[in-house]
Image (cartoon, rainbow, N blue to C red; front, side, top):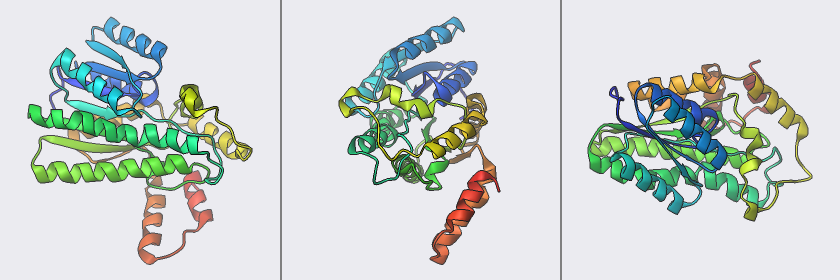
Length: 286
């Protein structure tokens, strides 16, 4: 895409973090913005601030784990603006750091429901309409470095993000085969200054409180430290914008991890068991 003014961008999880930064970045190009989010106060604040900057904006309370709510988000976007040109399936959560056997059934349902099913629902609700309108467009699905490297103490998150990478690759192929004007990207950020570690604030009450006696506090502390030192969400949003302009499938925010991803691929091709020390060293930048 290279035409943005007066076109429409929809961002899930758009009231904070990377999603909010993407909303601001697209708004600066003169786009009209639709935000879907579960946090009502943050959603209302985001829409007010966008409108104060003379951006046409709509906010919709939306739990992306529920298909009906994502379909309602799509209906609101098309009812208000008549089209959607950029879809950012960005909403995401993370459970507490713990071994995979200690993650509860509710943990798995919550993380997969938002991170993976949320993207599936976004594709199902929006892509048929975007194809029908016949204009150029772009879908950006937010995965993670954890969709390219499986890290310890975050199995539900890893599984969800690997799924998003695979889903986006399939979407890319299928759009190309069909000759569609739509393109797709998968965003794979590493350390970004967001509140992802505080995701429990949005955990549905029916899933119960988070908690397991096997939480790895040391890993949690290290992870939070890396996030605090990470890229700004605004830097990531700029990278996303560039990728949309250049029609790039894979969006790297931390290219310094490419050698570690390559090492994983070489282990797979060679049929070699991965070396946990080398992998952890690669994540630490050693």
